Amino acid sequence: QVQLVESGGGLVQPGGSLTLSCTTSGFTFSECAMRWYRQAAGKEREYIAYISSTRLVTNYGDSVKGRFAISADNAKNTVYLQMNNLKPEDTSIYYCNVMIRGRDYWGQGTQVTVSS
Image (tube, rainbow, N blue to C red; front, side, top):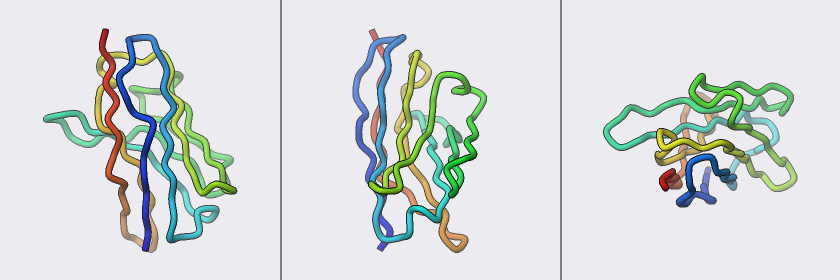
């Protein structure tokens, strides 16, 4: 079965950096585009980043453009989200996502808190 497991969240000061990982199994990772989303308390889910199945195309939400970077390691079946210059408004639960044959799959999420 498809499994997505996020890790790497935690507490970081404003201006700091974190790298999130999403380790996957149960599908052919190298053939699938991957996405990161986040959802803050009381807010709607927000699109963060996309990487194509070829790993050559990336795309970012406006709120993180220039600060976050998505990458993928096909040998490890893992997608990453490098987050730099973090701001308090980046505080959220971060989820990775894959769509397979029209169905969305989600991990359990990892909490990122940006606070001094």
